[in-house]
Length: 201
Image (tube, rainbow, N blue to C red; front, side, top):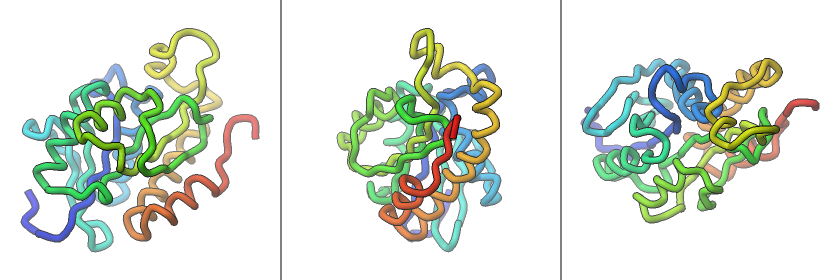
């Protein structure tokens, strides 16, 4: 564990553990923090006391922990609150990266102090933290065309969407870096108002 007493930033990617869930729409939050770890040279390690896989390090002179809760999506808050309490993290230094079916594939939305939008992972986090006053970066996974919601979010991107995913993950990484170094307002301008290509554009 870190011994540095400077403020720590917690970046949480939401998803479900296990190979059967890899590359599904619901796990794009996991993919985003894994990409951050690769870029920053950090390694994830399973830590039972946090019910998570964590990657810790110094990024641009800031102490950062990347977190992938291993509780399954609906209980994500159990893991997040353990980390928040252990490191005494201020809500302003928490970012949650999550999938969103209401946003087209290829687009991002960064907001602070907004509702869960019906997302069970965000509901769990809000329930455990007793607040929605934290930043969440939503990555669009598109509306389902047919079938039920569960099948859609636990399904994989189609061939056309797969070509867009690397770009949106790259922009999610850039948004996170801006949030870390320049604050949420500038990061929101980048994520919400910059070019957000989606299918068909």
